[in-house]
Structure formats: C-alpha cells, structure tokens
Length: 366
Length: 272
Image (cartoon, rainbow over all chains, first blue to last red; front, side):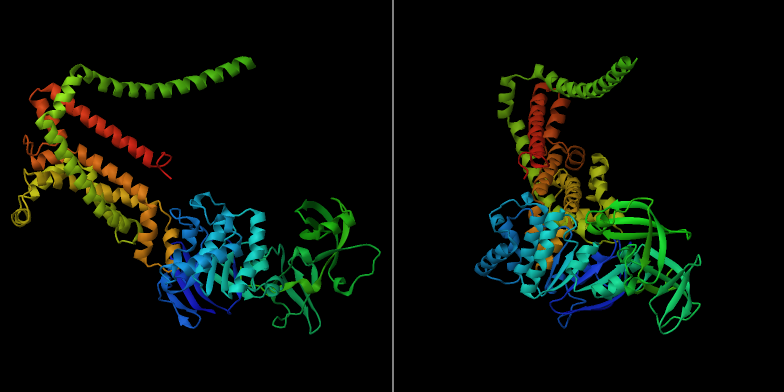
C-alpha cells in the first residue's frame, strides 16, 4: 500500500503542491497529466531521488520520507530504461541480486523464469544490450526490477518511445504480470487511452496540483475542474448561468442566451455562473423519422456539418448549431458514420444528451 | 537562360568546396613541410646513434617516468574530484569550475614562477624541509607537470561523467545499490573508455610540458633534462642533429598517442 500525505516538492522550474493520495495493495494508480505537470518529479520523489519539502510518504506502513532510494524497496522504470551498456542482458537482469543478498543460483533461476514470462528468453545470451530494441529494453528493465521483488513499482511513461504495436503488446501484458506478483503500481502517462486501459484509479495532475482522483468513470463523466475536462478532450465547453433550478430540472443559458437542459447540481442556485460541457462522443445525430429515445429528448438543435475528419476508427464532425454561432464537435464510430451517409454542408438534427453534461461552478477556475 | 543558371549554381558549389578544402590541404601541406624539412639533418645513422646516446636515453626515460607517474596521479585525483564536480550540488559551482580551469589556461611559465615563489615562502620551505626538495630537482618536474595535469584530468573526468546520464546510477540505486556501489558497478565501468582517453591526454600534456618545468626544476643537463628540455639545451648549444633526433622522438610519440586516442573514442575501432 502506498500513502502520500501533503507532499510538497520545490525545485528550479518545477513544483508539486500538497499532493495526497492512497493506493491499495495490488492496485494500479495511473497519474495522468500533460507534459510539464510534475509527473516525473512525483515519481522521483517517491523513489527517493528528490527530497520533498513537506509531507509524508508511507510504503506498506513504513514511513520512507527520509529513506535513501536503496532502502525503499521500490521498482522504478524510468523513461530512459537505463539498461547498463557495459553488462550483458543476463547481467543486467540479475544486477539487483548482490545488494539484495539474493544468491547467484536463485537469481539466475528467477531471471530465467521472468524472461520466459516477459517473452525475452531469446535475448538472455545477448552480450551487447545496445542492440536491443526499445520494447526489448523495457522488458529487460522490467525483468531486472521484478527480480528483486519490490512490493511497489513506479513507471514513468514506459511506452512513450515505443511503436504502437509494441505498446499494445506491453499494455496487455503488464496487468497480468503485476497481478501475478501482487505489486502495487503507480503508472505515469500523458496518454488517455493508456490511462483508461491500465488504471484501477486515475489521478489527474496538472501544473503540480492534483486536480482529481477517481475511477475511470468519475474522471470521464464528472471532471472536477475545467482543466481536467479540457485534458479529457471535452472540447464542447460553455460558459453561462443557471436560469431555472428545481429538484427535477436545471436549465442554464450560455453567454449567447441559448438554453440547455442540464443534470441537477444540488449545490447551485439560480443566477449562479457555471461552466458546463459535453464530450464529443455523447452528442448524437437524430435520424429523421425514428421515435426518440427518452434520453435524447432534450437539447435538440438543428445543425450544419462544416468539416469532417477520419481519425481511424471514428469520425470527427464539426457542426454549427444553426443561428447560434456555436460550433460543436461530435465523434461518431466509423460504422455509424458510413451508415448515415453524412457529407459536408448537410443539415442534421443533434441532441446534446442532458445526462452526459458535466457542470462546474464558475470562478473556481478562470 | 535556365541552362546558364544551372551552370552558375554548379560553379558556385564547386568554388565553395574548392576554397574550403583548399585551405585544409594547405595547412596539411604546411605541417608535412615542417616535418620533412628536418630530413636534411636526419639520417638512419644519426637516429640510431642518438638512440644509443646517453643524454637522449636519459631524457627519454626521465620524460616517460615523470609523465606516466603524473598521469597516474592525475587520474587518481581526477576521477573522484571530477565525479564530485559533475554529480554533487556544490555551492559556488561556477567559481570552482573557473579555479580548476585556471592552471590549464594560464601561461606555463607564469605557473612555474608561481610554484618557484611558493616554494621560497615559509610554507613552501617548511614543505621542502620536512618532505622533499622541489626546486631545481627531479621532484620539481613532477610537481610542475602535476600542477597542470591534475586540473586537466579533473576537467576531462567531469565532462566524461557529465556525458553519462544519471538515470543509470538512479536505476542502480533503486535496485538496492548504495551511492558508492552504483559508482563502482555502473558509472566507473561505463566511463572506462573516457578514463583511458583522459589518461592518454594527461600523459601527452605532461610529456610535452616545458614552461613550468623549466622554471621550477631548471634545465640541468643529465639531471632535470626531460625531452623538451633536452631539445631546448641542444638547440641552444647548436647541436642541430641531436635536437632533430629528439624532435623525431617527440613527434613519433605524439603521433601514436593521438592515433590511439582516436581509436579509443567515439567511432574509433577500439570503441564498443
């Protein structure tokens, strides 16, 4: 188990401000954030390579805030996998045996097992690790880390330098491996897909502050701040104020006077300034002549298709809501797009599903 | 019109290549001319006899002994000091850096004079009385060479450690190695080519040192006579043939030193 309390780290050009979170044993927490958010600083601090100014780090009930990196018993896969170039692949994997007092016989046996688990048996005889590919290096680094049996593994964008095929392989392999060794994992990434594929929980770190910590669904449906909403590609965001509020419905108008029906936010009052928005995947095009399902019966607008982009697997449509000057973004799975036969300039009817909207009081953020 | 334009562009490209490589060829010719102009004084007999010559022999051995010792001492100090300079967060780093560059940059004669004056002040005299004599002695050669070369070695080792990503050490430490363990098992072996190159450069610098040596140790025949001092003494005494023989030895030594350095560092055949 990992427990971080009020962690504050300051240095030239970076800072982490009052970070607290908890990861249960065997869980994987993904720390998601844009580059420069302080993700690597956080991992460096957890591994003991940087000193915090304030706060506490507890690993499995043991306060390690002041411990040296070698005393923390964590595995850390850095962005640079740092395969020692002067050692063979096998020597790299068993590197940690000596300081951890693992006998050579045990170490070599374990290295063999890990290699077969990670699919790198054929590399064990390589003498020059500089000939390894990026994906192979990551696997060797993982085997080297797992050999010393750390209870905690920190991963710093381990897939960022890999091609998409290798990345995919590793993304599906990792959870199996970690599950088997019952390790607690903190995985840092800027990639949304990676975060949602791997994270039991996701923590969003932006500019050194933890904006939200939650399940995948919470992060997707209820971003805690506007910055989180933007990071999750919620490009349809509006500024406005609450007009009608009752226990059953909430109506808001945006700054151009257009009315939207939103899910009821109990803490708000009529007149409150708000931000609200909807993910491009939650907007639907209504097919003419079909009865409307109840959940798409609100926020119906006529729209004109302006631009269409094929983004492999889905289509991104830019639409103008007729007579409002508002441009929205809509994402359609490819098969639906082809089924509907939509072209630039077409007039369509869209529904911005009421329950898919998130609402945030304005003023919390600029 | 278009054809002429193409020809014009081609001519400009050729002129550019010719001018730049021409200058390179000219300096190469210059250095070869310098070397071959000695040939008039150099015959097989002269070279062989001077190799057997007691004075040449003495100078060669003294030079090799002092310079190799100095290079070894320089690395012994330069490796840890360079590492500290590269990795530790030292206060006033810029000032320390500048101080370390100083002995390598200032004129060797000035440095020699500095040493000579130091060894005639109270702490210097105390040192000479209780440890060993320095002024006008063989030990003076070593002190003079070492004063320059140690700082050179520190500078070289710092840049070698700078070029090794600290991520490797960090990886070793997270795997359980102490700071010292990470240094011995990772950083030092990773720096091995650099260390060898630094040794060769330090050795070459010590071998060629003249200004500081002659000022502190003097130019006494058959006593403090290193190769450069021997050349100086023989030239002063108008023994041109012997001087040329000595120069040939120096040139050959330098050539092989530099060649082995090339082969050791990046892209060289001995480099892995």
